[in-house]
Image (cartoon, rainbow, N blue to C red):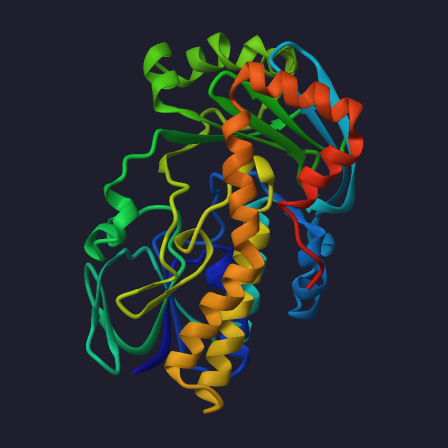
Length: 370
């Protein structure tokens, strides 16, 4: 019998594993892949996470993180806006960061099961039965940190699963001298936007969000990049001149920004399983880490007998909403403007004349150090 089973080994799952393992709770994390591996992700994290990461023994700057202090926004017409980021962030690949956090969680006593997919979770009342394709585990609590959308959501009959999402995500690692190391750029194009920032080893992460309709219209990824993304002159130069480290990109379909309940059939959701902020905000990784911290600390209090399960659930929902609901609202509304060439141009020109307004918008998607 486990105290906790964590489904999914992304940042929220690994953060929970580190904290819960350190607290002496018998914890199992189930991950369908095996570390290290790449994920579709913008690989930029706000520095609001840094004190926490360092406190739990994971210092990104000790294994290659790059400090990011500036932001550039470009429009399909080739106009641009430069801003200083108040708090700033850092770039680090998920390949490295996840692997370091896995090592720390393992050191703290968490058990891991790799190359297995969870196909069902049954609520038995006081316990849950978590089943993969080959075995089952009984546990007192379940944390769902398995990402944006999986068949497990369908098994749980989560409402958002039946709502088709038009978005796909594409990610490359590239080498280029077309952008400064300390800058994160957001390049807009019709029905999408592309983020680019430096990670370790002189590599840049290039990750874009677009629609299935764009892909269907152009036929394949390469044609999509040539015919639609490259109408933005900044992206055109990048795709023509940069050295692409991978032969093929990482691709993910059905990215959903719909509202999601934090608790489903007794499962406590965190990370993208709890709610996803628009990638243009560059703060999904921060939310995953912070949300898992909130949940794990409440679970520890519960196992210490200081709060009931009902109190845990109510407090988690309240704290999560307080921290992230305004960010998600800002992200959803900003996303309506980006990917629309006309609205992007209007926003960019207005922000140039009113830099305080531009800084205000950026601040809506970020929090304070924790």
